[in-house]
Image (tube, rainbow over all chains, first blue to last red; front, side, top):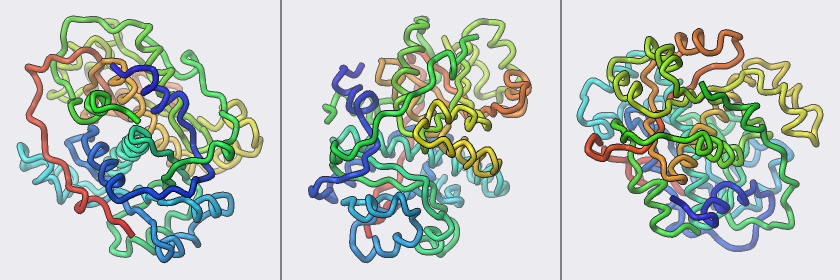
Length: 194
Length: 194
């Protein structure tokens, strides 16, 4: 069981950040995030998420034209912006990832629609593991859906089987630039016990 | 920052469970899971996940015909099985959830494809928050994609705007029934730093 401080860090006090302190994010931290998030469950251990960490000014400039105006300045200012993507051909890695069933590749290789759904579902799960792993390590996140997926895919994944899912700024947030916390649905609005 | 014990509970030692101890999961714990998971980020705070907690023998019997053979016995034996679903009409709650922009509802209400993609992406993120919240509270999870979504939707969501995403058994796992841990992709196989 986690203590209250840990639950605050992950869920209760954690916020989506819009401003960033001038404090870099090391390569070692990026590796630590991945080494935690990769352990989260995916169906048939399919692990379709692929991540591009954008840090150099050159790579930031390539991302820039895909961003909506509201996400532009904060993304250019973030120490790192992660493209959370998934590989529609994730099934080619199943011989490594799901070694006890050599047939698993065929469940998806012969059914592109099933592969697309599994990649999006499980890649999104892994995107959430990514954010909670980053928070676990003391980082703040700024996830965004406000960008042109087709432009990101054309610019960063020209080979065609990787699709961008969402973007996530990473760094140490500036609490002065937080928005007010928005309300959530109550248990009775979102859940039922049968 | 979380300590090593917390990182083990969430990621490193946590496993997908197949067998369950005879130890019930209280209503209060279900509420605590939700109160943590609801704080995780979703785009425009859209919060599309809806959860049905199946505990009674009657509700378990309604779920049974939708399960694949490999998921049948363990699901019937689990103290609780959660249907993680999402509401394709989540945008009707945006006036509560995103009060500072009254136009947000129209981004989705007039674009069913955008609504479907946002519901699936963000509902999946919330499904991951759900599992990590449950683990935070000392519970074990057994997530599954192996079931007939159309049968679950017909049986539990006949009104039509809710769609099942995945199922997750909940309880206190029996370590004797764990499978061997499967390999994960290395950082260099899944990530790039630009």
